[in-house]
Image (tube, rainbow, N blue to C red; front, side):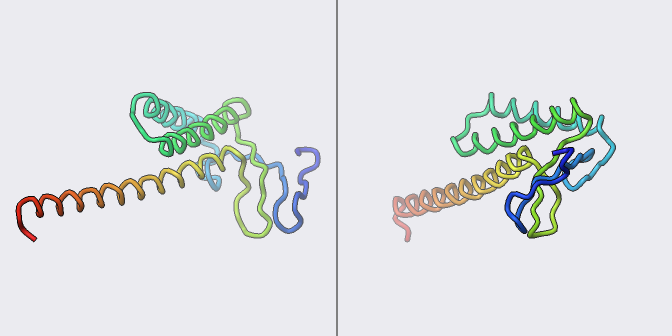
Length: 141
């Protein structure tokens, strides 16, 4: 993509555009490569330990694995190139150029949020049901 600059995939919708990002999302902390590499490395080790040591359901494991994989992809780019190569540009909205690793991280976080909400709902229902059963066993209504 670098020599071409941009290649239209779907006119008016999406193009591939070569863009070097020396920051994180939306170029925050631009130019702070050592800080970004250090913070990302620490967070990825924490996620890896979480995956290895914590018992979790399939969807939670998938979510954390997507986050880990996307983070590793961007970290490799940052270590090898000093920047992250972004290349997906949405033309129908004003949004930052991003890459596949960013998609993995975003989908992982979204899936994790949905799983947390579902698990919380499921636990609340189980607690209410247990309380109702206790009340019936006590003879109170």
